[in-house]
Length: 497
Image 1: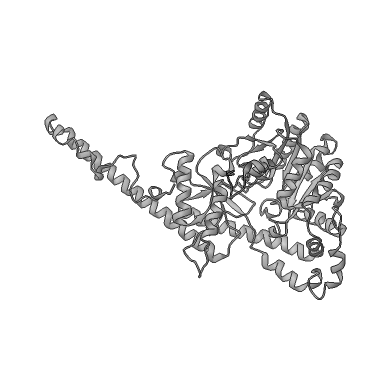
Image 2: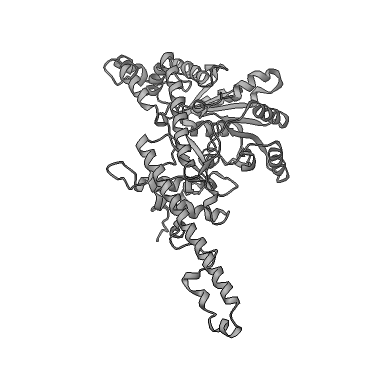
């Protein structure tokens, strides 16, 4: 009997639906760009014509400060001669509560990274394997399959994996528009909720990212207060992803915890949950440190049990407990990281402005929301994808198209600037400059062709009917192509499918 084989030799009928469905999101252009980089990674000397990774939101601008501290504090590592005495205690079984010294240190760091305006209780900290694990853990705690969460667009593509894939929770978009800088409005929020009600979909909560990924913007206190009021009125949860809290370089950041603290008895605290990690603020994504901070005692207790499937290693907890407890170092790191991020953001956006490219005004994050709408032949997502393919394949920059972030307006792209050194950024800006200038030259050629065609049309208008019929094919030559047809030299003509 011959067995039909699929997916690399495995019969899909023998596997689970979760294992074989396409809801992971790996086939998104967001991840396709990463694959293009992996196949041809840029290197200043070894591969100067490779793809530059501008699709990875990673903070490498202050990594040498962390490296220096680690070298100067060898006792913090159980793998060093100075720290080997703690090896046995860290190597034996640890329960899912986490090391007390680790939770205390994380709680203090969360307060410092938010300007010291709010304190966090270490007893409410639940560990998870990165923000990915923290977000999924919360979904398992708060919702059942087919339940839904409202979420403003555009939003991080990884949420389709983190929040939906294994939980079968739905994400319902709250449409935000560029006309008001993609801010969430009361009307859009109410409309999304009412549409869910009409469709008989059970809404369990609202998810926001503050600071925003991909916008790099922050919500002010009035907006956050209005959102807390909304979820209290509807009696649904509010999940606030604050993984970029420490990247805010101006003005000061307002955490949802500060709003909850100020509202005191005017809101149901048990509906508020915060997701955090050390991946962005400290540049440690490989450590896989995710945090759920919930004001709901039951969620904390159940979350700790669920965290057994994605704990932070004791070795990592031990090292970070020591590092985060060094207040002098942490104060210096937070200030210097903000300064460097602000400087890189300013340098990069001004470099784009020099070639006529503007970004959404932002004050946080490791990226910019770049406006390339003027480079589209037509305002469609098909044209956006054509432009993206050119940027990936010909300009060799991995930027992420707005459609992969569920943006409802074509032509926006997220571009990351903090995961590279100064030289690589200069090369990236130079490539963008050359691409835009080439596009302007091609546009000029198209304008000239259009003018020549109009001149011919005027001349033809003066000819007799018989002459016109005799020369009826004159306009079909390549010299007089349709005014809607792009120049054969245009970068978009070279777009690969």
